Length: 290
Ligand code: ADP
Image 1 (cartoon, helix red, strand yellow):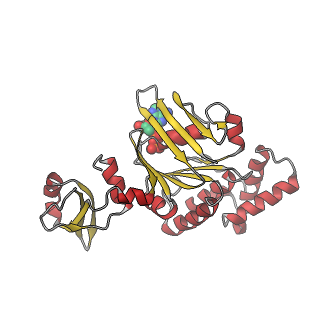
Image 2 (tube, helix red, strand yellow; image 1 turned 30 degrees about the vertical axis):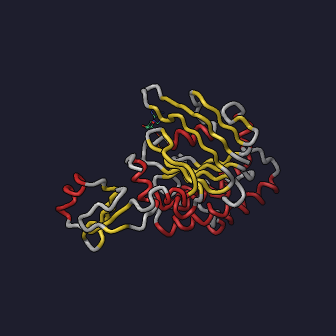
Image 3 (tube, helix red, strand yellow; image 1 turned 180 degrees about the vertical axis):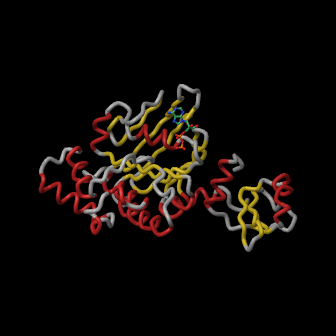
C-alpha cells in the first residue's frame, strides 16, 4: 500500500504558509521527513493523521481518501505526536489497556494479550506496573510507540520522536522502529539527520513548507557528490571563510573548526574533497545551494 500526497497546501490564519504544494509518494518501510524547526513537518503529520484540514490537495492511502474518509484512516493509523501530553499516575499496563479499550477492543482477555505483547515489544514489560508519569523521556517515547501500535496500524506516524533522548535510548528507539518498518509505512519526522541516516532508505527534506528533495538516501548523497570540500581552519578565520565560501557546516575537531563548503569545483585555499554525508545534503538543500 502506498501513501500518495498531491499538491497539498495549508496557510494558517496568521499568514504562515506551512504546506506549499507538497507532493510525496511513500511506500512500505521507513520514510524520513527531515527539516529544520518550522519547516512544516508537524503540519503535514497532523494532516495525515486527520487532525487538521488542508486548504487544497489530495492524500490517498491505498484507496482511502485521507482528507475525506477520516474514520477509515483512523482505523489503520498509529500516531505518536510531538507532544504526547499528560502522563497520568496510572501504570503502563492500565493506561495501555484503557487506550486499547478506546480503540474498540472490548474483550478483556484479548486486550490483556495485546497489552502484554506490546509492552514486551517496546521493552517495558518489566516496568509495566510503574506509573507512566515516573518514566524517563526514552521510556515515555517507547510507551508512545506501544500505544500507537494498538490494532496493528498500516500507517505509523512519529513526529520528532528522538528529540531529547540520550544515545542509549535513541538506539533502543531506533531498533523498535526499524522492526515495525518492515511491514508498514512508517513516517518519521525529525530535524535530526542521524535519525534518517540510521533508519530510513526513503526520505524527503522540507523547509518553509516546501519539499526540497525526495528520493532515497543514496540519491540524496549523489546529488551533491564531488561538490563538498573541507579544510581545517583557525577559529578566528571562520567569519572570513563564511564570507568567501558557501560554508554548509563547521564542527570542532581537536579544538579547530573543520569546515565543509559547497562548490561545483575545487575552491582552492588548500581545500580537499570531503566524503559527502547526509548532513551536507541537508544543509546544502536548506541553504538552497544544491
Ligand atoms: P515543524 O514541525 O517542521 O517544526 P510546523 O508544521 O510546526 O513545523 O510549523 C510550520 C510553520 O507553521 C511554522 O512557521 C509555525 O510557526 C507555523 N504554525 C504551526 N502551527 C500553527 C498554527 N496552529 N497557527 C499558526 N501558525 C502555525
